[in-house]
Amino acid sequence: MNATSATAPFARAAAAGGTGAAPSTGGAAARGAVAPGAFCSASEALALAPAFCAGSDPCGPAGPASPAAGAGFGGDTALRIRSRRPRRAAFSLVELITVIAVLAILAAIVVPVVGHAQLSARRARVRTQFAQWSVALEGFRAEYGYYPSFSATTTAPLPAAARLNEVPGLAFQTLTGRREDGAAPDLPRALAANPRRVAFVSFTGEEVGAAVNSPISDAFGNTDIVVLVDRDGDGLIQPPATLPVVVSAQTGAALAPDAAAFPAAGVRAGVLFYSAGAGLTSEDIVYSWR
Image (tube, rainbow, N blue to C red; front, side, top):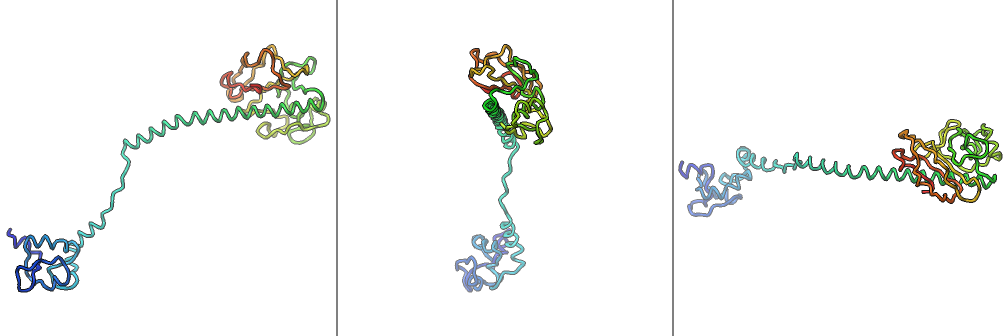
């Protein structure tokens, strides 16, 4: 193939009547000066190639480029150029596995921390309940001159420690002066202990159910709650010979209080409470004085 046949698709962009004029790269003036049927050299063809990529024919007659010319070379090429779009980057398998591993590590760190925070919050809530109930019992003593007894035993001497719900409904009716449904107390002991029906505390729906004589519970749902009072009025609660075991409502475990939990010299207070707390070990027991 010679140079002339290789450049046949390109027209020579030389001035009319001359052979040494510089080639033009496009425009009506260049097309008007081209001799129809002329051929371009290889160097001129390279110079005129951008015009073909734009969809025009610099070597053709003046006027708009023909559709065939634009579609045959420049049109398709320009369309392909315009249709190119940057491809979106995707995560590789290694990157996905890395992200999942990082999330798993974060979950392993965060979940125990959150669980411990919730447990601490519930223990604090139980201590707050104990403090409120202690205030109610102190209010009862200020009103009637003695602490109420919630024990099933009614003969003297009263036990050093009793369970708050030992007699169903007794603690609630004694401290509120009513039943859960708002009616007058139906337990003779409660009515005898609080004949004026003074409300010393208002239990929440979390602490007592709607049924009559429902047990009082703490923030862990424990109903086995031990209460100790100052029986001789000296402002000091002496440790009983044996602290009663408490049963957890969540685990069903019977937990014995630690002997070191109660000071040998006693606790200077009028009322004390404790319950099983989370109920996993004896360390979970919540004491109102610790």
